[in-house]
Length: 259
Image 1 (cartoon, rainbow, N blue to C red):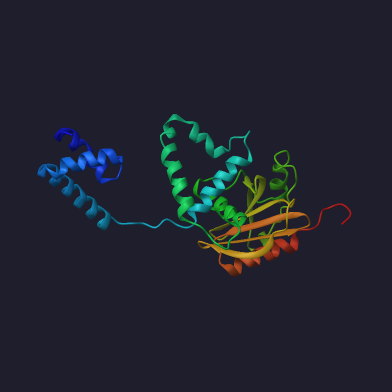
Image 2: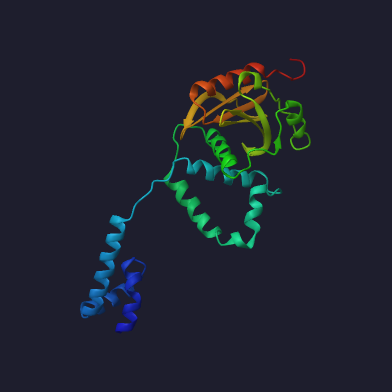
């Protein structure tokens, strides 16, 4: 191996990217070439300085929940392109695909939220995404008789919409979302500057356990009543959040025939 060939391989050698045979040839050259030895040593020192002095930022453990929710949403409706994915079809966004894939793999392998049901994590992810991508509501209204009919034809069920304005938790609208591998209704409430997502869908599996969890400052609680699943998410304090849930549970009625 001549000097020019060796010089081109110093970087890959430093990063452990060469096969064994090439490594042996390069090391044979390095043993008799002080110039290449010096270059390699300087590069190794530079890498060490960068690794030791570059600031490191720990990603939020909530990142995994957002990514898993997005992946699950994609699988849930193969024939329908969600509104937020239309951007990915644009050429200007196509260059981000590779970086996004790497981010997904890294986040899933590095972060987890043990002890918190996956469905609750998914609901929190949907809540945060609705705030961050400016898609909190599809229908904006404080009138329950406007919000409830809006879901007609979009879902195979009719969600109950409770108005808690008099109690300080005004209804402000609704949104179509994806949760538990299906389209669901999200009813949006507000408490001062905080928003509450109340996801509602038919219970065709086991009942939700009704346990309160806190995930990265977000409270989440799911329960089952009268054949419907309810899952509330908000960054409200625990006391007000539980108060909201209690009022929803009290005011939702059983609409099943024969009950």
